[in-house]
Length: 241
Image (cartoon, rainbow, N blue to C red; front, side, top):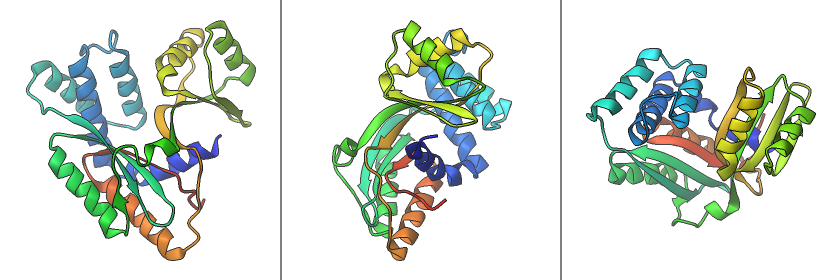
C-alpha cells in the first residue's frame, strides 16, 4: 500500500477514534448528498457510497435515516464546503476541508489551531499546488491482473497501481473516481472496497526532525480533528509508525 496513503490514514486516526465526530461527519455529508441529488440511494450514487462508508464506520442506522429525512423535509441547515491551506510547524503543509453553516466561525477556529501551534493560514493556492487530487481505491480478494483487465476494457487511466500480499491499491485523478468505481463494481459485484476516497496526497513528503516541531504538529492535527466543521485533514508529514 502506498506510503502517501499511509500518511493520510494515520492523519485521520484520531478523528476516527471519536465516535461523535464520525457520526457528525457522515451525517452532514449524507444530508448534503441527499439534498443536492435525490434522497434515494438507488438513484443517487454519491448518497449510496456515503451510506456504505458510514455503515463500515459503524454509524448507526438512525443517524443515516434522520439526515436523509431532514434533507427530504428541507428543514435542515445549509452547509457550505470550504477549504483552507496552511503552513504548520517545520516544513509541514496542510489542506483542511470543512463543511460549515457559519464560514466566519470556521475560519476563526481553524486559524486559531494554526496560530496556537506556531503555524499560519495561507491564501488560496499557497499550498494546494504541492498536492495531487487523487481517487484512491484499496481492495482485497482481487489480483493486479484482474484490475488491469477491468481498466483496459473500460479505457480507464490510472497514475499508479500498488500491490502487497493482501491488497491492491489504485491511484488515479479525482475526476476518474466514479468511472473506476462503476467499472470495478459492475465487473466484480461482490467485491467490497476497503477504501474508496478522493484525497489530497502530497507530491513530496517531509519528516519533522525537531522534537518540538513534532509535538506541535501532533497538537495541530489533534486540534483540527476536534473541530466539528472539519471533515478531512491532509498533510505532507511522514508520521512515526
